[in-house]
Length: 173
Image (cartoon, rainbow, N blue to C red; front, top):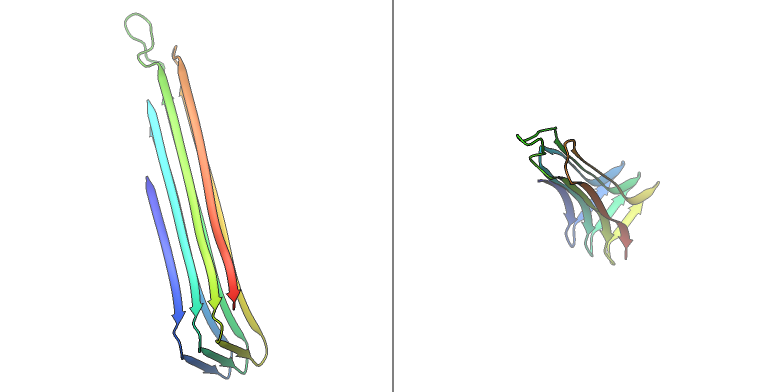
């Protein structure tokens, strides 16, 4: 089991003022990579989870003014990967039968990301040239499960599951 997370938050509180003659940048970014491998002779189980959250919250009464450009952004990336492998090589007892009748391999991966910007009602964002307010995110999941029973086994099973959730939102109220 491997679980990793990363979080970056920026909150500009009520009544805060930011004035600039040049470009003003406000950004939060987070990234998480959770990759694991599980190998065994009889049963292999593996799970990887990656979570990344990047959030910018601009509260009511905030004033952001720039004679140049204003760039407000969030970016989150996640990767969750699991590889499981079970391989039972040919083993025989004295009677010529396999010692094990089953081999199993189960892997699961979950990637979760949140990348949000909230500009509350009553906040001011005024740029002399250009104002860019944008959220972005990228998620990747990969699961490989392999199982083999090379003697006279009766069962070999492999199951790979992958899940991803993403919330990428820019909310200007």
